[in-house]
Length: 86
Image (cartoon, rainbow, N blue to C red; front, side, top):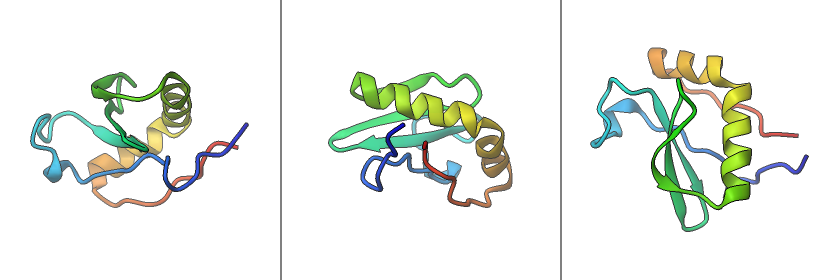
């Protein structure tokens, strides 16, 4: 499978930077070119924004693979880089 490059790689943001969803909803921001989406880590649903269909599928596949790690990072606020899809 094609890798997401740095321009299309999901961006994790500190929960304190979220003004719309607050600290109670674990999420990350996925940025793809001019598109931006907020993805719920627990439900793997897009909370806000949108992505092209193919990018959305890749981001959600990536998030499902690393859901445990994403939740751990959210809870600890210790962020590490996760591998892209292969």
